[in-house]
Structure formats: structure tokens, C-alpha cells
Image 1 (spheres, one colour):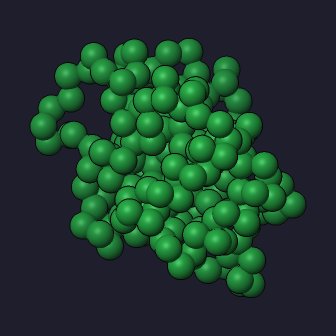
Image 2 (image 1 turned 90 degrees about the vertical axis):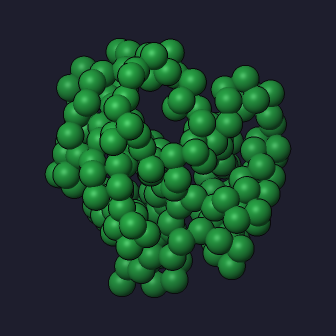
Length: 187
């Protein structure tokens, strides 16, 4: 039985349990890479990243949802207001794009993570669908995502696959470098 809860002060312990179980995920990122400039991220220890995410959550800048299987946290999707993910704005290619006003992002989806014991059960797609629904409930608008595409491989990475986003209504805008695909949906 899968349920979804947004990250907030009450659900922080569940987020922390899921990520601590996996050493902060991806080398101790704690889902902070896209939330700060890369120079700041690189100076932070794993504990500083955890604390930074904690502080953002408790200051009302939470961004994401937790998927539960019978009240046990098993997956995560980080999404929120575009302004909460400044790393994208400073990307080498993205920062030079002339995006028309009507296509400026209101939302961004940055990361998906599934507990290693629960993979290959469609939880990433479930989490993405839940994020899309929450975005719609919050007024919708332009949503950006940046999945990786490794030589056409369909294997999802920490930010999902191009194929998965396409199934959920996103369209390819362009490649941003060798492996990153810039995608957009209007909800």
C-alpha cells in the first residue's frame, strides 16, 4: 500500500531515516546539489549538507515528497519552486538560453531516489506521478526536469530517465551537454 507525504517538519524524520540508511545518498549529497551553487556544495561536508537540507525544510523551503510502503519510507522525489534550485540557472549552457517569459519555469523536478531494497517496482515513476499531481494541485505552470541520457540507455539515474519523463507528458527541449536532457511540461 503506497502513500505519499510532502516533506515538512513532521515528515523530516522519515526523510532523514531513508537518506541515512543510504549514507546521505550519492556520496552524501542529501539532495543538496541542485539547491546551492556547486562551489558551495563542494565546500560542504556530508553533515553540513544534511543540516542545510534540515534548515531549508524547517524554514519553509521544503521541496519534495516521500513515498511510503505501509508507513515505511521507500522513495523520494525532490521538486519545488524553480527558485529553490539555483544550480540549474548557473549551468554553462542553460544560463545562456533565452527562455521566453511564458516558458520561464515555475517548478523544477530535480531528483528521484528509491531504497535499494525496493527498486525495479516502478517507484520512481510513482513518485514522479505524485509530484506532478501535487504541482497541479498547487496551481501548475511550467515544469522543468533534467534527466540524464547515457548513449540512449534507458537505465534511470538519480534524476530519472528521458523515457519516464516522456511517459508523464514531458517534452525534450534540448541537450545540455553530453548526458543531460532539458525537458519541460506545462501543467
